[in-house]
Amino acid sequence: MKKITLLLIVFVFLCTGVAMAAPKHGGTLVFGRGGDSVGLDPAYETDGNSFMVCDNVFEALVAYADESTSLEPGLAKSWDISADGKTYTFHLREGVKFHDGTPFNANAVVFSIGRMMKEPNLKFAGKGFDVPPQDRPPEYWVSMEMDDTIGAIEAVDEYTVVFKLKRVEAPFLANMGMDFADIISPTAFLKNPKEFLRNPVGTGPFKFVNWISDDKIVLVKNKNYWDKTGGPYLDKLIFRCIPENSVRFLELKMGNIQICQFPNPADIQLAEKDKNLKLISQPGMNIGYLSFNHTKEPWKSNVNLRKAVAHALNRKAIVDNIYQGMGQVAKNPIPPTMWGYNNDVPGFKYDPELAKSLLAKAGYPGGEGLGEITLWSMPVPRPYNPEGLKIGVAMISDLAKIGIKARIVSYDWGTYLKKQREQPADMDLFQLGWTGDNGDPDNFLAVLFDGMASSSIRTQWKNEQYHNYMTQGKQTVDQEKRIEIYKNALQLIYDECPVISIAHSTVIWPTLNKVQNFKLHPTGSVRMKNVWMK
Image (cartoon, rainbow, N blue to C red; front, side):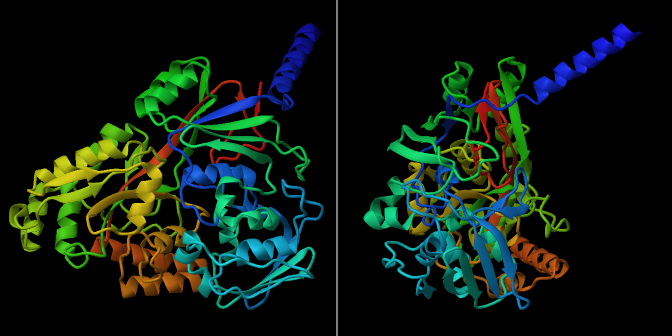
């Protein structure tokens, strides 16, 4: 019995030792992704392919915990909020350096955030920086009405920054953990503001080296990283662009990449059977949607026409055949795991006969008089839309069944986003989607759909009642009251049908077994600081 007990103790010790193996330093990890970044200045980008690189080069004042949207200290070690909720004082970490060797301090925070203000009201500590005029509108900042929120930013001393708000803003602290609020090196930016988006300099665990368009972006370990409690462990991190899902998965199986973003759903089953691979999954805090061009008729004012399109689309077939078990049909444009979700909204059932009736009621019986419309389809896989072009083909097939003729329009990803933002007259319907940034419904409902708030809102739906709901939601601190506000807003979206919610996806990415401690994040962030390889 003593021998058996001793063997069991040894066995448990060995198993525990394996489970608690110390992270290993060194190595190069190649991350295979579906598209290239648009730019690497976090204040001006909106797409996940840009932010996944920024996630590793830059940091913000606050951070989100692993696998959640709970807030924790980032470049600010602590913060205070005034009793009236309008003054936020951030106490910064000391001794942190940017990748170019310049110091991180309060002036860098004032510059990084203040450069996005339309009319900067800034105070530096001692000698500060001249803030250059904006080359283009910072889209996140504008769409989130930050100029109506932040009144002034002041560096009280080298390591204290005060934000004075114009109004109570319930999601403000969570917003300050988003990519657009990353802190950059003012010195590096001012050397060449227009080129900073291709030569980013932050305080993060990895430093930018080079970028070959449509091929790869290379980062290396920041050996002087301030946080000594963990990584970075990898010597080099390469984001490689491989547009075809099947080719990207094949590259993983061959060992040419170590992480495969957005495989085809069918490849998930192959990965499960491959002893050299493992699957990392996360319930998606996302929405894939189809919107109308609300800057032009008939989409702008004809709700019956919008609803005819909604009832014509067989969204379940799209999810079953294209998402293949990695998604669920959406009723609301926020995920069901998010507070404020309205389960009473029925969603648009697939009903071609009802769609035909609504089409006639809209003034276009059998599609007559509508002409051929365009349906803009995404060219790259995203967490909320695995294959935009295939989904587009399915959609125009469904529309044809009720008499609406449609053709697909697509561009490369950067051009698609730029052209769609301009709301061109030749765009009728367009695919887009969203992965939540901070776990707050405002980050979906206001940023995506409140066209009265900003010309940067991509849907450009303008509805005064909806705008009032969004304003109330921002300025109400009581979460129970905010829940009711957002439920009412979701009911209004269903009634007016400005967009058609298609699906929420489950995000599953395969990796090689030797990749350790890689975790998916609900915000879609790709955080490689603590990843290492056996």
